[in-house]
Length: 124
Image (cartoon, rainbow, N blue to C red; front, side, top):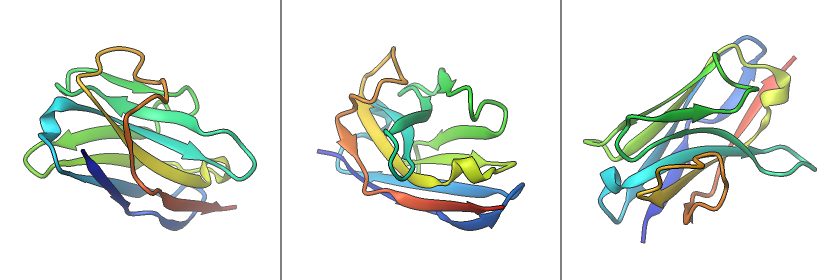
């Protein structure tokens, strides 16, 4: 079992920045590929970014490429999502997800473990 707790969400103006954190506990963090997904009201959950268990691979959705950066600190059992140049369309609940030893299709939402989510609201 892996427990995931997101933090860092909040209200920010267009063009601003936020850094989300996801703290993991329960298993060896370095075994897990980590992903960020988001869900806006009345929309499907969508992929945002992911980083492989080794840290050697990252993947981003087209909508956030160049603005968001995913990183991980295995010593702190934490994955981060640095979000810059935020837009109103980035408003959503952001979820952290984990899947052991995943090496491909990082964008696919069939991760084994999920956090409860943190709200990000970007005002225009």
